[in-house]
Length: 429
Ligand SMILES: Cc1cc2nc3c(=O)[nH]c(=O)nc-3n(C[C@H](O)[C@H](O)[C@H](O)COP(=O)(O)OP(=O)(O)OC[C@H]3O[C@@H](n4cnc5c(N)ncnc54)[C@H](O)[C@@H]3O)c2cc1C
Picture 1 (cartoon, rainbow, N blue to C red):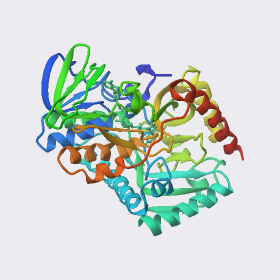
Picture 2: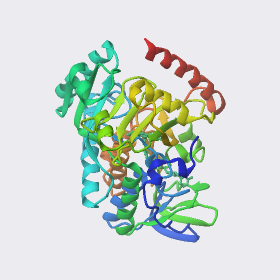
Picture 3: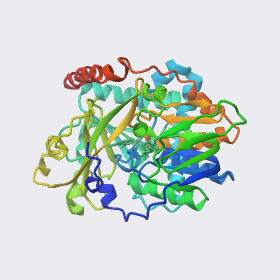
């Protein structure tokens, strides 16, 4: 898994800020946030804005997880279909959840504007169909989201127009969302970090939480222990994403961590980059094992795809992604891959977000299932609401039922590898 920092284009294209010092000794705050990704930072920022004394513990550095590695695509909705949420919580709450996701898109733009975050935000996102059944599914999605969810920023694009937008013969239709977009995820994350610190949040980096003592009574404090210190706080948020590992086994059982990879080509020059995606939207195809791509501000192609369900196979991601790029953009065969990196997705069995409580004053958010660029920000805001005393929206998400991955800690991965073979076969049909 290409976790090495120098392989990550986002890290390489961002002046690295000085690290915040690790936690040392025992310190007391109102709120302890575990995790320096967008979820944790958004929660910390919103809580500090409510006047609470907040500390955030990050195992490595801000943006070490998915938030600093992501495809950067801001996509409507959730990783699961809305029909999954309707079945899980009923049509009324599913509708309210949709509205939260749309609010998340607005919140992302507001945070960028309010805190002057220089993260190359661009409007426009396209979901790409590759075959007739995809074209039909996109039409149905457009109708359903307009009529049942009052979502009106979508437009269906047919094959001929799509050829003028994406210089590839591969796609048959697209659903364009003017409300979606893309951004430099690491700069966005660091920008939230700066905003949080500016609002008074104490950030501790290189502070890996090795043990949590979660209070069982509302009047008791929670404790987070690192190698060098202890943080004591009345309220606790766990937002460790895929990297939380087995710190809390009952949370780990609900997740499969899946490796996924992105490559950045050499700078292609403005004209050539523009010719590939003329409207500068982000794009993701409809396969189960999907390709997703966009232009970077310095005129590279950023191309993600290929997942590792075995989670353990280091492989030559640059070579594999190059061959996938060649399938979409054969005209780029000569382009050099300058960066190739990977990260882990925290996938739930039903792909719905997994939020909930660990104790009377302890909460978690996880399971954004590869769809967290938007949802992580609003998830943090919902946590600030629940800690601030308004539980309604957070609790609505906490009611989504989640099953453990079958097969226990040892057998679920082989089982998933088999399931994914099946999904690959589906992509070919
Ligand atoms: C390669 C890749 C591509 C992606 N592309 C997209 C995309 O295009 N669009 C989209 O919507 N989503 C995408 N995602 C998903 C998205 O990035 C995540 O859903 C989102 O960033 C999750 O944010 P988070 O804050 O919840 O978790 P993270 O960003 O993973 O942050 C969790 C943090 O917690 C820290 N942590 C974990 N355990 C501990 C501990 N014990 N003590 C202290 N700190 C700890 C980790 O170091 C990490 O920094 C992608 C993810 C990856 C990996």
